[in-house]
Image 1: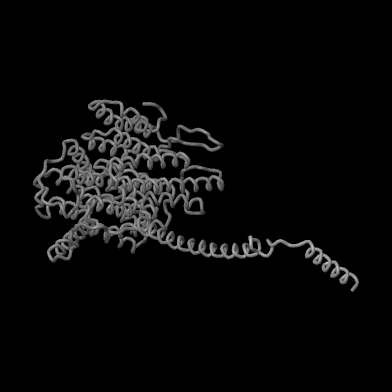
Image 2: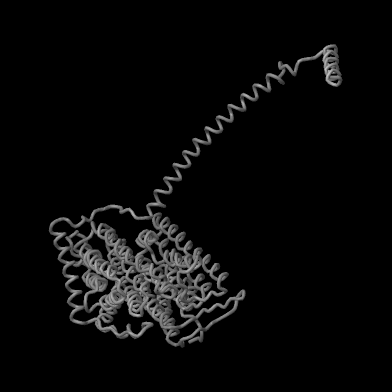
Amino acid sequence: MIADLPPGLILILGAILVPFLPGRLRQLYLLALPVLGGLQLYGLEHGSFAQTQIFGYQLTLLRVDALSVVFGTIFLITAFLNVIYGLHQRDAVQEAAALVYSGAAIGAVFVGDLISLFVFWELTAISSVFLIWASRNERAYRAGMRYLIIQVGSGVILLAGVILHAQATGSIAFDRLGLTNLATALIFIAFGIKCAFPFLHNWMQDAYPEATVVGTVVLSAFTTKLAIYALARAFPGTEILIYIGAIMTVFPVFFAVIENDLRRVLAFSLNNQLGFMVVGIGVGTPVALNGAISHAFVHIIYKALLFMSMGAVLHRVGTVKASELGGLFRSMPLTAVFCMVGAASISAFPLFSGFVTKSLTLTGVAEAGYVITWLVLVFASAGVLEHSGIKIPYFAFFAHDSGLRCREAPANMLIAMGLAAFLCIFLGVYPEPLYAMLPYQVDYEPYTTSHVLSQLQLLFFAMLAFAVLIRTGLYPAERPSTNLNTDWIYRKALPALVRWAMTVGAAVRDGVLARGRRRLERALVQITRHHGPEGILARTVTTGNTVLWVALLLAVMLLLNFV
């Protein structure tokens, strides 16, 4: 392989040829690029390479260490799975956009300076929006525009923070920054937007469900996990992240339970899972950071698997509305099995990947003494089972017989789902390869009797609660509806406020103009009265009268002069 070549550039530059290649050759080419990226990654030594000077600042395009290798590895694995999942499509624009997007995310995790990070940061935003617009309908266009504004806005805020930080410190190194001043606060907010912090999260539920079947799977993997990487790199141990993350784990549970669109349910659960990672980064101990990073690794796989299964349903029956689905296990049994593997993984069942990483995060939180936060995370874990572990497979495949009959998912989709499911089980049964990749040494055994029993108790209690709610009719019914989110503020409230302000402004303007018109008319009447054809000053004055007035004025002046 080429020395010092960032692995992400292989995908970005490789995307240039995609539109020019014919069908079968293009498929092989798409599969080869992530493989070449992986070979390039594992041929690199740890250290900083591909450095250059610009305007007195040192850019580092390739910084290889344990943290970047973990995220680079999972991003390349996911890029490969995404290519397999999308082999049935014939859309060169979408395929090229997915390559550039994944390559930009991979490139970002290997840079060593904030300027290069900004470039890749914005490239992920610009390339990923085409996966939304590829749906080619009005809803997708509008959602894509909102998504692009928010994502590019995040980059602008990042750039402002980088400029202030460079002015204050003379450095643009992308290392631990800490939340210390305005510059780092701006960088923190930029990361928070991409990480979908509370009140900054709505772009995800707005845009992801509007993307294409393949596009949503691709989107689920990179943007938010790039932000997790950035937080782990720059803000480990920042305490406010603990409370932000705790909120992130809880509030999506309630939205997801009442949501009818199952891809939107998964977008809410994605937000919930990000919260666990953010808490771990905020705690900042080696155990908690290992937990957050490992959880990000497995989360990318099982979340992609869940989005793949719902994408397969959408591809075959044209809908993922829970109120319109049910009984699909008869038509799509393999998809149903893969979906349940993803559901078991996200719910952290023993022998599945989520169990061996989420427990690591919870252990780090407990050891650091954050008891209330630990209890919040336990509650959120039960909520995950309710809305993703049970709701997704239950309403899509088992709830009732909707009468829908279709073929099983295409072979390439099944292969991608099968590989993802295999990884979920393999890492759940044998987590040592993942633990060995983590930045800090792992001295942790997930399969202790107490841990397994306590987790099973939590899961079975949550399953019992779901069953009771369903049997008693207390579980929120699945019906066509629109659930309000914080994007209501700028989609509805702000436009309504602007319309009201324009109406009031127009009324004020009309009143001012009317009053000014009346004053002008009165002034014109007065002018006409004095200067018009019949006005006093327009009358003809005789010479005798003029002389008389001059004489009177002269007399007055003489009188004043002698007095």
